Length: 378
Image 1 (tube, helix red, strand yellow):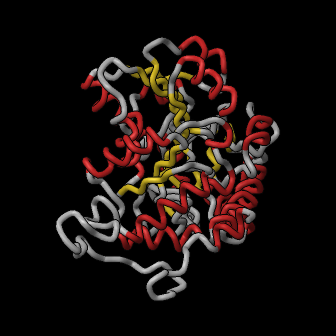
Image 2 (cartoon, helix red, strand yellow):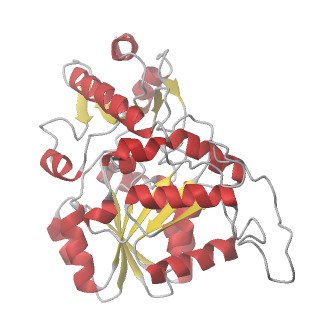
């Protein structure tokens, strides 16, 4: 089946009742026939029928052999990081999501995990950074919030040369627009809170893997740590995934037009969007993505925190919120919101200016969205 068909039929009818929508098995435990003899479910932390469906669904959509659902994107990230041990090294893209930067540098570094943050858009940087201690190469592509693009296929070759795992955070594009495992990645991570659920009403995270041994390790860690996705949120995510293809197409169409408009405005300095032909890595995005996504970032010529805040408090349709991937358009200020915990010098080095504004472009009428941006700028 083509992706659009898979997405619509990702929630399979219930075998027991024939219910066309996957039931919500809102239970913590299950009756056993005798000690340790059951129908495949004993305790919901370990496994739940509703969660199992969404885990199988995300694995199939990403082209992996197993999927794991968590209570948030950071819970998923934390589970992957638990594969590391003291002395292991992680090389990550330098403008990685602020929450990922925080957990690596303030939690795992205490346990002896070494971290390096580099510009992975330049393959030479990756070649120079890897060592015999490198266990993970961690990418976001596009990155949050400056939308840098890294070549997954080429970096996958490097990771295999040094025996490292390539992890790709695919939150910004979803499997509807990019499938990193098919490009050579070993593990894919998602904040399902964003495009997968798509309606701003779920907190969830996902991991997809292609290696059975790693899948066994992650299953053990998921059960041991316990940060699993609830049955109800599993069901909500399944419902959201069914319209993923339609939503991503509309998000991308709107974002392209908004990015093009921003390049023409006299108060706008830089515009970050992979769909623009002058984006430094537009050709790589066109090669490995099916679309350019719904995220647009831009900075202002008056590069101050105050100017950015002024814009974000004047929009009427773009809602000021610390989220993305919603059907509603959202705006945020990375320097004081998503990347507040990232040190100032790191922010500046990676292009997160004081005036940088991140837009999560929704599925509203694009003319209304452009007019909203125009009135807020003017």
